[in-house]
Length: 300
Image 1 (tube, rainbow, N blue to C red):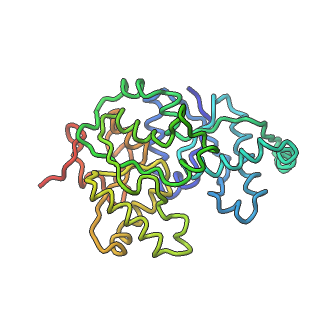
Image 2: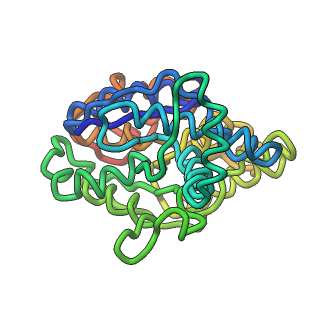
């Protein structure tokens, strides 16, 4: 399937291993990525707090660029983008007059957003478009023995009505389902649905690091081998900031944090180096032996 692909800012800057691993995984899932390389930042909810019209214009422009492609839908790999763009789309689709006003800002580029684009995070696309059965069929190296803690973060699970979470689409359980489809063992712990702390890191760094350290510690106490996230901002706070979170928490953590496409890529047979795992602050190889199968347990 063809998708209009919005990788977001962070995956092309701070976490290029996410962008690269998505590019490596896509052909293994028969996904053709039409990258929206002219699109701008979604605003991460921050711009909207100061200037909602500007944020909505930026996202309407991205939607309009996606609608110019022949992609079946728009896909992102950042749940913060999903949350911010879903909020924007809700406003644009609900008010024709406001949508027309926003489109006036796009006329100089010959762009216009038409109501009703389908925008899905890679996690949603895996379950709803590819399907769990098909995903299982494509697994070449099951994640046998690997205990994975899902970390959803904020933007992909709330508010539930806006994000289309209901009985028919239990999107707040999709990470659990994908981990199991890849052959891994799901580890539930206290922080599964909590904020990683990144949104407040510039306002209260200590509180942000305490949040990250608490979630990582809870996952460690639950005997998870690693966490998996659908959001690069969560990855920044849980991996990049983990050494500082250890100091704030007053304990060693050493918890590897994988991007969702990396976890999928490993199960589909790709090697850690092909998925950019050497870029992680906490190296996944420190607790996982990838030599034969994906099995938990650090070497003695």
